[in-house]
Image: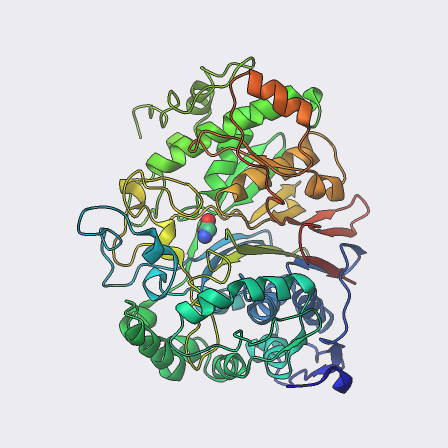
Length: 575
Ligand code: GLY
């Protein structure tokens, strides 16, 4: 273990192997993993990165400074997050990327986990038919086949620098270690019991005395895994030694992922889910994330209601937004799932007439109970711990990535000898119709488990384009609260004309149809709560924080305003 007195700058070797036609990378640049600060806001001219961890944001900016574009930086940031933010940054999970490229192309990349070949619909039911959410949420059986590494390589075709260079900061951070923050120490301490329970080989995160702020976390096994990926590409994860370690871990813990599952995994480019809102083009993720469609539904249900004039946190605005959130989530429960396995009626669910009909029984004077809001009648025709990063460069590329292990630290199982957490994403399937997942979301046939199917997500990496150019890059973690937090952040910016900081920092709220209650965070106006209770709304216990939104807005002079959420260690970097 390095002692703090051995502080040294992490020298990032800029590899000489550059792609043809590309200018040589900038001189060696450094990140100091033993002494760093958290910047909540930057104004930058050349490029910016906002993520859940300052060292990951710094890794992204270092790559931008080295001649990389926003896609390069997004890859490096994700890899660094897999080291410095093991709660949600990952190799053993999955995610989604939405990007707008310099040439005007928009991309949606799906690298969501998928159900192993041996998975089946009732795999989390006891003999008496009752659902066993412990098994879908913790330990080996809760893991879907990881998609992250495949996603990073699939996105690399739009990057400029060699992958070996993009992964180097992550390797250095894992091998040489980094100083943990107070909140990281707290969450690692909280995790100790589960780490002992759900691991067959004690991982590096297990510690006899409590973790404390300033401790150095070194991850040798993870560094070795990253090096195999650096050397062999995606095969360094899905085949060979890493795959062998995953399969052995599964055998020791009676999980389902096989060598064939790993070898067969592919990331998929899909047409983005895009729609217009008052002259802006909003680009989001299609199925298997519900995020893009839910955002579309919610934005369209408020579009003609002059919400800007109601005022931020006014009773009228909050009540209207609560009701549109309720209606969108009722549709999610019934109709949404992996479109490769279930015909999701996307066009109908986003049809203007359909959405107007959904608001027919909206009453601005009282709550519409969820018991009378059924999923919409289709017109005939047709961990919460996740993490988001937003990246932009001066060439016109913008990237929004949300990636996850599902719960904080996923299944809590670290692959023995490989050093990374596996996801517990199987819980995002509907394990039994009507049985809530860890976020309280319910579902049915559309999101039932099938081998090879991808579980429905709420992740909502989003771009807003103005005159065809990136204007806002935004997203957040937070399970089912993700779409409603992106919705509220955009309404704050586009309708209430808030600054980016205000839009991100102001208290948020959430309704998801079931349970029929409004969730609020600290700072929600008590007078509005009281008035809504009189109108028939129930409120759940107030939460410390909802989401961790990372947002970049392009200012009128072309500079980038990058804002990191103040609900965590999130940090904005740029130059
Ligand atoms: N695991 C959270 C989500 O994908 O929505």
